[in-house]
Image 1 (cartoon, one colour):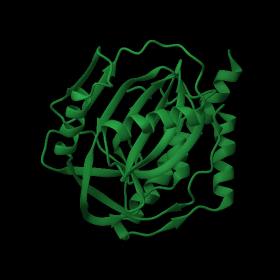
Image 2: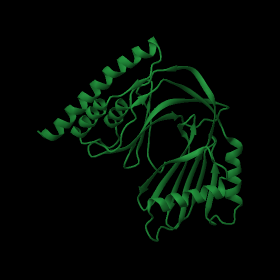
Image 3: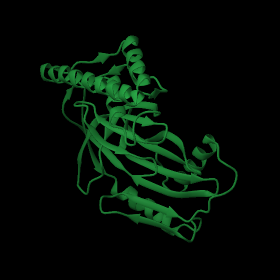
Length: 276
């Protein structure tokens, strides 16, 4: 019997039990009224120890605050997306073998035949190239901020996301794949926040999010490293006039995998990979 694997499996089972009990308490709180919460230093230390025992590194400090939140109503930025598509198609600076395709759900995909090569990029250089690309073709995007930049094979994946009321709107984002020789891919998903719906409800603490994300990590959790935990809103794009984004904890791993957990229920919304 492989005792090391059995130990990890047992630890993960206890993590799942902790999550179940925590959600029962959170659901009871949500019924009785929205309440703000704050993690103690010991709560984060305890979560880090449990993750390390399962072979998972928590390389960031999860937020301590978990305020009540409601759903965010958004609508597609159709005119802006079409304007970006026209700029990409009409520019003499884009490579000859490039495409700017607008999908039915409002997502704009840009691909270009960029030949890998050149000196390896540093993070700051990759971000600068991505920003230059967006300034040239996307114009005024003040509502978008740098979310992360992660090395991905020979390139960098640089992601920008929208913000509303000082919270990231993860679903509304621009992902750019950058090589030393140029931008090979870009994905534009642009939402326009309208306001909130429903009353604010209590949410789960960040420690539950990291444990839940780790327990269901694709490809196994052992050896994984969590590099960011953030509270915001997420939704897939829809071919609709407007829809709701759910409050989520986004857990980002060092390999680029993103896991979104419903901040009210703890359920996984959608796991994603950098380069999506």
